[in-house]
Image (tube, rainbow, N blue to C red; front, side, top):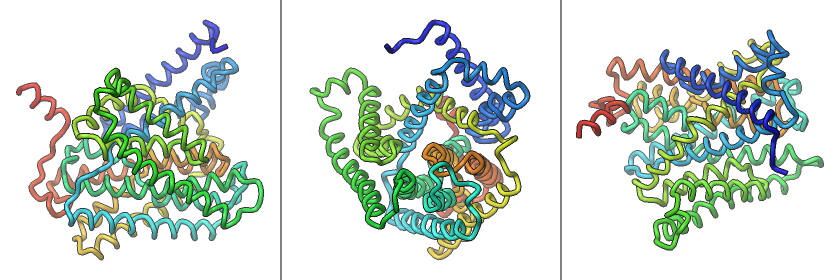
Length: 439
């Protein structure tokens, strides 16, 4: 009942191995030229997918990834697991300790980086003809919400990776950016839940149904954070918790799957459950335990599932047949300017200097993983079609590239990221490893 033939297993393992190897290779090469790894991983899907291999050698592409009936479903399963683990990892990077001044700055940026950008995106979507980009759900309201989210969203995983690579994760600047990204992404996932709920309705959309969808999402967030915090605090590190004692990582993966399942049954996106599982673990557990979980999840996720997820995103793109470069450039310029201006103006209003304000505007513009997740969910829900799916993925990739390049210039020139980081010395991962080895 649960078996595959030996030939099917061999075929799938070969195809997956090729995709995984290509994702790691191109991700590694991307990092060598100071490009975020995610760009190389998605590029692996472009190389082996319809954009290149499928365009020049369609038979080879069909044989490799559509070789037997259930092969696409196997890749779909890995894709979903990678997506859940990406969101869980994002939650584990949530920031929990702030000074009073940093909390004020973060709160101002959450409001200033989210509301204006979202509102501008919403009204801009109404000014342009979005009909050619509607998905199978054929719902203009849902696609307007997705466009607004695409303008305002920020990536925790990619911007964290950039900070780690530059050795500035310990700075005040990094802490504020990651906290801002985490909080306002949670708010935007609520909006995405509303969009998918609206898209799934076949009848007339009412205010009541919209309020109900948002209410369920908010109740799920509050309930998970409160109840999860209490349970994690009281029941995790006790002698009677045999599952935690038998496997720390297995215990938290179990929690993640259960919350994701609960979210799906409540018609909230499953990724929401995975994200909140990570957030609760970071908030409720001792630092040493949450860091150990983060390391364990990262080891398995970023070596297999997450690269496969990003590469599979690339497999779904056909930039030869379903991509409008001129529309993309216009959308990229509009999205980048809107988000940067919103953050810059907010920063200046709270008395931050021009360079700090610009640094924050560029960093918070990084859409990265969440931008790709947004496009994946919206495409799978029928909100957008393949052309706009490609636009949103490319938007996420390009806006991941810009912050890495700019912040590298700032660090290399010895410029200040923000007040409090004047005497900042970059601490890179290899320095930490070397120090531990010496000690």
